[in-house]
Image 1 (spheres, rainbow, N blue to C red):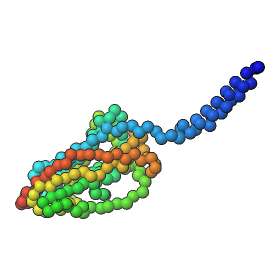
Image 2 (cartoon, rainbow, N blue to C red):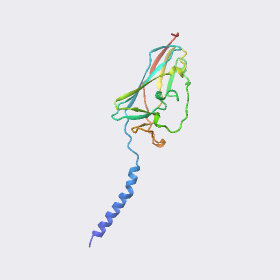
Image 3 (spheres, one colour):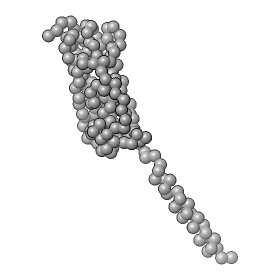
Length: 179
C-alpha cells in the first residue's frame, strides 16, 4: 500500500492548522515586564503654621529600560486629584484641591524616566491641605500609577498597565508662630 497520499494529506492538514492558528498567537496578551519603580517622599522636619509646606517626591526607575509613567494621580501633575492621606492632631485633613475627571491620556501626560535614574518634583501641600494646628502630621502617598509602559506614547485605554506604588510615610511637625 502506498502511504504517500496519506502523508501528503497529514502535511496539508498540519499546514492548514498552522495557518489558522498563527493569527491567534499574535493576538495573545504580551508578557508584562516587571517595572522596578519605587518612590520616596521628604519634607522639612519642622514648618511654622502658615508657611508653605514643601513635599518632595522622588520616583526612581531601578530597571534596565526607560519607562513612561502616566503622571495622573501623582505629584508630577500637581493638584488635580487626591493622592495623599494626611492625618494631624485633629484627625484626617480634607483635600482642598481640584478633582478632575478626564478622558484618554495624551502623550504630554507621560513622564519618561531613563533606566537607573529618578525624577523629582517638589510641591507645596499647604496650598491644598490646612496645616493650621501645631502638632505632628503623618503623610502617606495613597495614589497609584495608572499606566507604566515601555513605549513613548500613551497606551490605549484598554491597554493601561497600572502599578501600585508604596512610599514610606513621613512626619512633619507644624510648630506655632509665623516667620
